[in-house]
Length: 169
Image 1 (cartoon, rainbow, N blue to C red):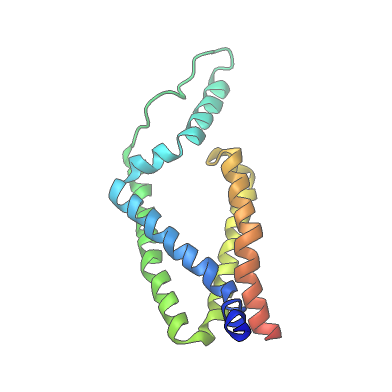
Image 2: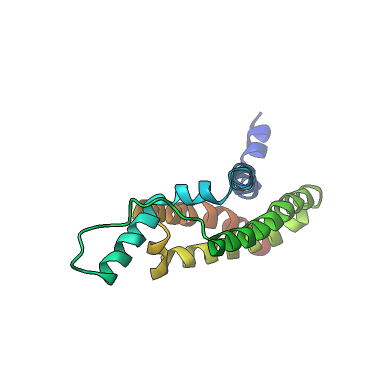
C-alpha cells in the first residue's frame, strides 16, 4: 500500500500538475477565443481598457471631467489585424502543446526538455507582467494573481522538475 501511495506522490507530479492544468486552460481559453472572437476578449479586459482611456483623456485635456471610459469598445481594422495575428500564434500553440504532451507521454525522457522550455516561457511571462507597461493591459488584481500563479505554482513545478531531472535524479 505504501508503494502505491509513493507512486502517486512521485516527482512526476511536478510535470503532470502544471501540464494538465495548461492543457485544460488551453482547451477552455482557445475555445472561447476562437468561438467568441475579439469582442469577447476585449470585454474581458474592459477594466484595463477603461483605465487606459481615462489616463489618455487626462493627458489630452487635464481640465476635462468627462471620460470616454464608458464608451463602447470599438474593433477597428487595426485591432482586428492584431487579433488575427494573435489567434494564428495561439492556434500554433494549440497544435504544438498537445503534441508535446503526447511526446512526453510516450517518451518520458523528453519531459525535462519540455519543462525547461515551459520554465523559460513562464520566466518570460513573469518579466512581461513586471514591466511598467503591464499596468496598461492588466489591472492590479489580475497582475498580482498572475504573478502569484507564476511564482508559486508554475516556476516551482516546471522549474523544479527540470532541475531535479537534469541535475539530481
